[in-house]
Image (tube, rainbow over all chains, first blue to last red; front, side):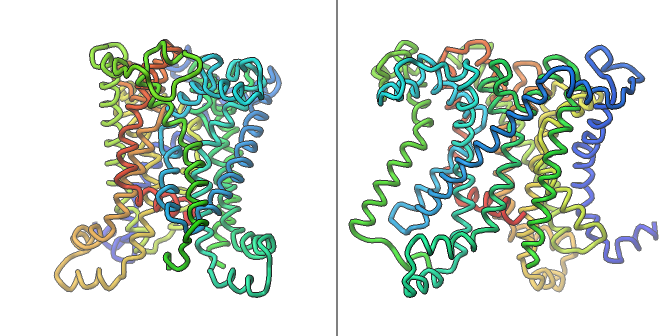
Length: 300
Length: 282
């Protein structure tokens, strides 16, 4: 008892406050991460889920994933294509909107606020909305494209292997725009007005101002927006699962949907865990890069 | 400072018009499902599409009141229980933890913050299978608790990272004044610090609620009985079975958005502060 008292007396009171949350996270996150790793080295299926001892198979699951069929490679590639396509467009559009809303016209603030809506609504609903809008006969997008003469026949957006990815990317860009816009907006307001004024006096044109002042001062914001965007997009699950479930013929299969399918549709829990770990390892290294960068940024 | 350089005259009008056009394009999908939910099934498939229902049809909503199988309002209630539960757990654990991190220095503090940051970036796929097995063993599989516990793992780290900045910004003198007035550490925490950090607590509450409200993966995986499932899983099921019943589906979607829209309308300033401080500062 005395020892416990002494422990808290000597500047360790902090533990008393932090411990419950740490314990909770260790139990519901830390332990599962570890057991997911172990699971991926075993051979657990629906039959062996309740078994007392589980066979240890080493790297067998990983080897099979890489060699037996191409689905893992396909999903890995799809995840990358999906992430990069989303990042490029949502960043450009978000940036443009942030610059626009940084101007002080009457309705700038309320409209900017309302544009946050797409980011807030449940992704399942977003998936449903876009599935409806991309519908072949019922969809407004086909109707619109026909109206302006871009297409003559209805496109089977979600059931065609070439266009399904385009459709999910567009849906995800819609979610990502507000996120990019608001973070870049915040970054823009930190640039002091005087810099622009003095550049104006020196006779710099708009392009020079943007290249010489806005971009360099915004660099930390841009970097964190892109890395965070990468992390959030790389693990997208619900949107794709709702819109296409990874189909048609794996054309929109990403790591997260593939892992889910293996575990909860084919009941190959160990294989599903292995795919999840591959996803996790990639994100872990990207996160570390982000954290390292965020910390050095804070100290300078 | 905000009013320093307000735009005036025709330039102002031009910007307003451009913005309204952008606004209409970007938020069109939301308008579109709302309108669709009020149309008859026939009118939905009509070409050219109507931009306002010719016949106002509220049947898609009303039928849900009677229908037992995919009862929208029951799953709405389940979602509410799950989201409020996850929110309460998040706050109960995050408030003291963030206070401890902001006020005390101890060995391993940096590592703990780092771990919270990393859990925010964790894909759900990593936790799904092990939690599924764990909940089965704990006999809370197929109960609302399973999803509440899982959803709180998103809310807790987010809330801690936001709240620690709030607590750190409260001057120490205030706390010391409370000690002089006879508070001990615990009562000072409850009577002085929490009321001041109230705004931060609200931000965390909102986000923890929204994360849980929008979750599909956990609710769908850990709960199999239709009548216990949250509304997102309800929609997903409904889509699988009646994929083209768009009048019902869009009505379902509109009902799911209602709480989000309410939070959004009444608490917008908290949301923007949560988004920016959560993501950039970490």
